[in-house]
Image (cartoon, rainbow, N blue to C red; front, side, top):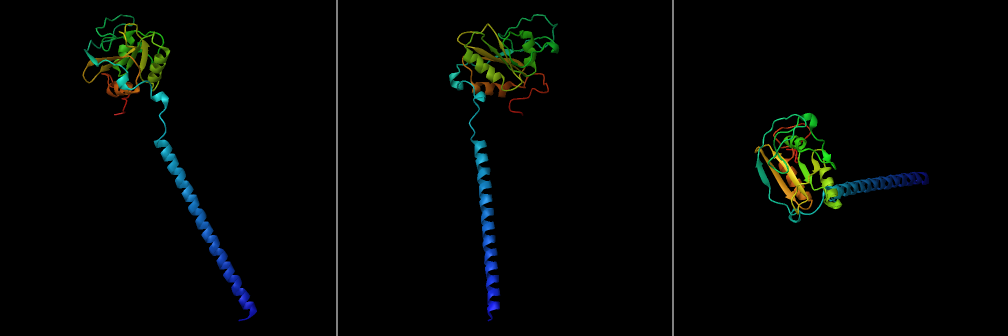
Length: 219
């Protein structure tokens, strides 16, 4: 074999070896990229699955520590509109059902520091909104937790109510449309578990279904 031909073959073999190395390195780089992308995707999924609960959505104590009464039910006390300003005498304290002021007097959702007339709030309950009637002289910590619970959505209401028995600091009330009755329960300490169970059973379940006031579970 001539020297010239030999050199040509050597150059060809070297070129083929170079291409093989480049191909191998490219394949290895692709595998690394895929591995990194997979690791990032897994990390994101794990972060979502195991993200710590937002303290704002985990208020207060466990249900077993909230010192709540049994749920008490009340026969419906009516459902008619009365003239704005007319005072209504309710059997339940605080009221859960009954005659109430017309739609223009309905209370806004949220935590209210000022007392709200029960004739307003009964109408809210007819629409499936829950009312937290709280003791105005409760501790700042308890009032803050009640406000946190109320502000977890734009549906329910908290308002001060003076006539709450000791040792309780608030009363949950609702108008149970399915059974046409009022329901209430008194508690000493705020509890996310108690609040969620009450919303599950009564939020959006009043006798009048209103757009924007859905059930807690969305069913």
